[in-house]
Amino acid sequence: MAYNFLLEILKTTLQKNKIEKLASIASEEAFSVQELINLTFHQDEQIGFRAAWILENIYTLYPERFLPAAECFLIRFPQQNNLSARRHYSKILALMTGRRASPELKKALADYDTAILVEVVFSWLIDTKVPVAVKSHCLNILANLTERHSWIKEELIQTMGFLVDKQSIAFYAKVKQIRKQLRIFSI
Image 1: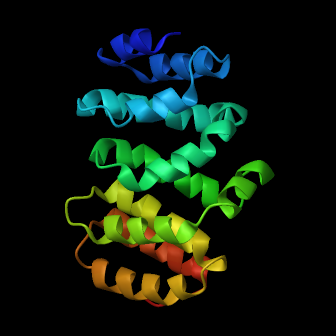
Image 2 (image 1 turned 180 degrees about the vertical axis):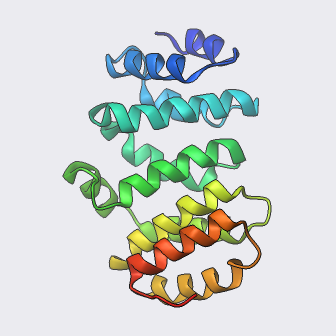
């Protein structure tokens, strides 16, 4: 599938089943995952959002296709300014940093300077314009990275304490979950 053909598809409204079908096509090497990552930065935010949605589905359904582009994803992560695409980017990174990530993805992450990601994720977490779903994934990312950067834990605890009363009840529930993960039980 050529870049221009993919771009034309992304200009149309897509349903979940179509997104999954496009992820399936990508798993057959019909188009480059790196090209898809580039499309997540398209000037048309809807195109960027749809491309990020497909990217998330490639990660979850066909991780072996995502793996060669993992470094590209990590490098581009801090540059993502499309709030809708950030939802998918933050979910992918939350999964990459989680315990269930494949050994190959963990290695890709280990070879990358995650301090850059931590800085970006903290900035997204405190940004009032960032949707709560993105913030929820940010909490997961930071909690997952506490093993690699011990200083995150204290900063995350303070940030959650500051934000918990300013966000939705769903955010409050996520904070409880993260505190449990970090083994901190008071809110």
